[in-house]
Image (cartoon, rainbow, N blue to C red; front, side, top):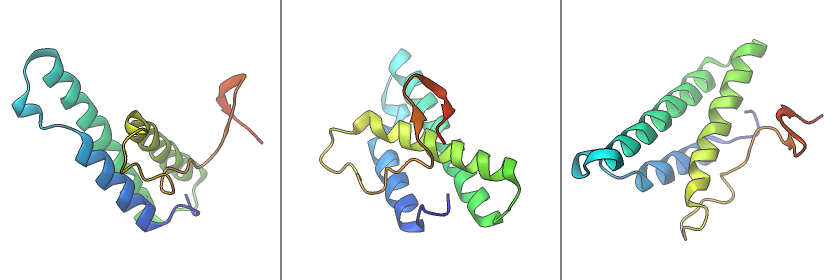
Length: 106
C-alpha cells in the first residue's frame, strides 16, 4: 500500500462510485446487483481509508489493506474500456502467479 498515493485512491474511488448506478431507480435483480456492488465498494473503500490512516506495521493489517485495495481495483476493472478509466491509479499491490492465482508471486 505504500506505493499507492492518496491521489490514486481518490481517483479510483471517484471512478468506481461514478459508475455505480443509483439502486433506487432500478427494480428486481438489477437493483439487488447494484446494491451488492455498492456494498462491496463501500466496504473496500472504508477498509482502505481506515487502514491507511492507522499506519500500522502489523502484517495482518497491511495484508488486509492490500486485499481491500486489490478488490477495489478488481471492481474498477469492470469498466476498463471506459474512456475515464484511471489506468495509472489501477495498480495492484502485488502480482499473482497465472498458474496459481490464489498465491502471490515472489
